[in-house]
Image (cartoon, one colour):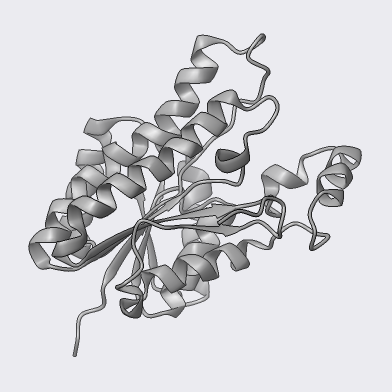
Length: 249
């Protein structure tokens, strides 16, 4: 019996992250959902939910903003599940304020989790992928990393940096059978966006040509496509899934 490939999804218990975990599990991967140590209760609840559904998904704790924590996380995954073939860097936070009101901590926190985490996590696994001659790295950016957004200089800068990381690493590992791509979602229905005041949410939706926010499963579908073995000739690209909110080529 062929051993299932292992996929790690950081931020794997969040709205988009958990949908990505479900999509990859359906595609036959053995999935590991990463979560911050402070989210232990939520992670255990999510694990029970997945176990009840007989989903092939486990959980692992790690702070993506800390290189040493990511090293320990990678070691735990290796010991329990083996080598990781698919890595989805999905963990992210927001600390929205205009630059005038933004503190140093607001800036550093977002850059650490949304951008520096790509180095902290990917560094743990990419050598194993290149040594094996196969791998998929999929980085979750945002429409606001492409167009910018009022009150999000920290987030927009970090998410723009995500694709810069993607383009550079894609060139470094292409000949080793490893692809590196970005997915840039638009506004997606999660607990975070459901907390937006109704009037503000309506204003956002009014700007989206398809007339609604995305469902997390729609973003997960794109990730699943890039994780497929048949996506071997796609690397260094940024796939937008934003309902037409920002259209470019």
